[in-house]
Amino acid sequence: MKITKEHITQLAEMITPLDTPELRAKYKAQGLTDYRYRWDLTYLAGHSTDPKSCTRFICDVLYEYLTDDHIDTALRSIIKPL
Image 1: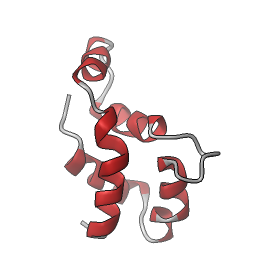
Image 2: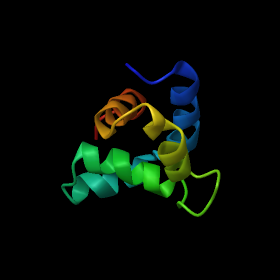
Image 3: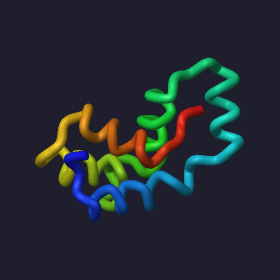
């Protein structure tokens, strides 16, 4: 994985608390994909106007050296499939 250990830890700390059984069940019942679930969690982890949001972290830090494919690989290592 191309992401640094420090950055994957930061990403996990932002997203993991939002990965609940209830939210998983909702996405599964709606037939949504694992990909959609992973990326929606990044959005739920804070909006882009919040300087400490996951969106800001991805845009300001991760996109400096990663693509969406790299970030999705990191997200797959953090969030188990539905």
